[in-house]
Structures are given as C-alpha cells and as structure tokens.
Length: 332
Ligand code: SF4
Image (cartoon, rainbow, N blue to C red; front, side):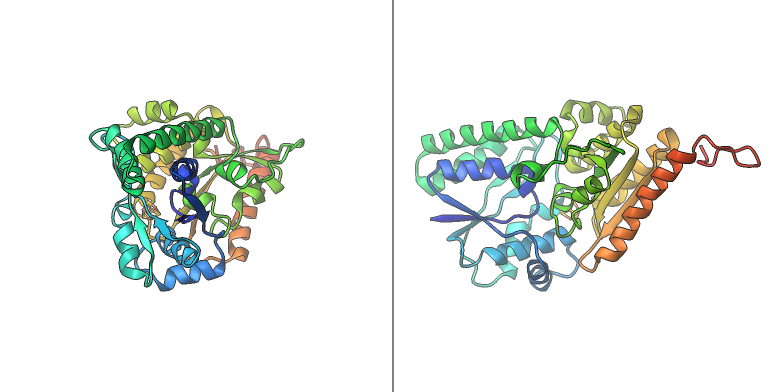
C-alpha cells in the first residue's frame, strides 16, 4: 500500500519523520510533485476563497496524489510545543480536504497535540502506526527510528543550508566571492516551495549572497530571545520567525533581511511588524517584505529583490560618504 505525502505546509519540516515512520511500518511512500501552475490552480479552485495561499496549495498537492496513492496522510497539527499552538488552519485541515476534494481515497490523520505534554504528540504517531498495522511494538519501533532521523536532519540544518539542500539535494554553491549574508525569514512552506517563493534561495545565491534561514538558528537561542520579550508568544511559528530574525540582526550577522509572507496570513501580519519595529529601533539593517499570493508574477518579484540587493550594495559602497550638508547618506 502506498501512503501519499503532500509536498506542502510542514513537509519541509517533518518529511524525514513521516517518510521513515511509514516506511518502517512497511508502507511505501509517495510524495506529490513540485508545485506547478497546475497544482496551484487546482488548489485555488478546490479550496475556499479566503484561505491563505499555503492552505490552497496543500489542496493542490492532495489532488496531485489522487490515483498515485492508496491512502493520503494529513497530519492535524494542533500544538508542537508544550504551552504553545500553531496556526488554527492546521487544525481543520483534514476536514477542509475531506469536504473540498471529491473521490478522495482513505485519509490517515495523526492528531498531534503537544499543548499539555509533548508525549501526547508522540502518542499520535504511535496510535496511527498501531491503527495501520495492529502492532504497538512495531509502531513504537518505527516512531523511535523516525524520530532519530528527524533529529539528525534538524542537526544538519543548524550547520547551515536549507531544507531544500538536504531534501532535494540542491546545489549549495561554494561562493568564493561571497558578497554578504542575507537573512531570509518566512514559513518553511513559503521559503522552500520553489514555485511560490520564485526560487528566492537560488536567486540570492546566484547574486553572490549566502542565505541564512530560521532553521539554521539554534532553538535555545530563539527561546532565549523570546523570553526577553515583554509578552509571551504562544504561536510556535511566530516565535520561530521573530526569534530567528532578531538572532540574525543581533551582532550584525546579516547584511539585509528579506521577509517572505503570504497574503492573508494572520500570524505574519503582527510578527513581521514586530520584527520590523525591533530592527528600526535597535539595528537599522536593510529590510524588505515581499508578500506573495496566487497572482504574484516573476517580473515584479525579481524587481523587488534586485532593487533591495542594489540598495544594500549602494549603501555599502557609499556609507562612509558625507553629503554636502554633513549627514551620512545611509541616514544612520
Ligand atoms: S500561519 Fe499564515 S500562512 Fe501559515 S497556514 Fe496559517 S494563515 Fe496560512
């Protein structure tokens, strides 16, 4: 039996766990194709209008798996860390898919809720494995092995590079004339979906920049930064974006920050604004926000990115110059 895994939402975060778990249980896994115009259009046409782009895309990836998988895996991620939640759109995802997509094969749902106890999230996998195979011991063994693969993946990401470099074995350029470092902040399902992100990682590398992403920042560092904030953030991914963004800004670790956001994302609307304010008040690092939706085109996107990089380079070249009235041209 083949289990279909949609290449969307938290695929870039948890694929090693999911793949190894199901394969250890004795199933084959099949992943949907890379996002294309067809996948995006199918997602848009089969999802409610007011969902955000990543949720629409998830619908398109499920459709891409129809006829190729006997069962489709749709995790219901409620909470991934004790005392925190993730976006509510993940909670209703299995029901959204079941009500929107016709001729859907059987769906496997794992209800992961670590809000009270991380063990509850682990049990979701063990219960799923037990339901599929009838064996608790096999489910436990599969989960242990899959978790160790997931931890190894997370450790590699802390050394640098992006999930795409590992999962797609992308070329990681050895940039000899390294022009600088760009911090790229956004949800993994935007940054690493090459279609909707317009391949931003490769574009920045081709311009001669090294890219730092939230997955490269140690969790303890993010936690330590977020503990300094005046209020507790209880959205796990909001914390990750804000904490990793501030970690990049501290000590001038990056030459610029690019934020990639999805139109209609509630969490980004305040998290990215907070990061913008911290930057303006304390760091003054060049910063740009690019918002994408299903209508975003390459021309406008490239123009924004190139203008931002030109601005960083112009600033670096002229920062020491004084204007005729005595102020630094950078305005700092
Ligand atoms: S966090 Fe934002 S982009 Fe992600 S699923 Fe929720 S609304 Fe959509």
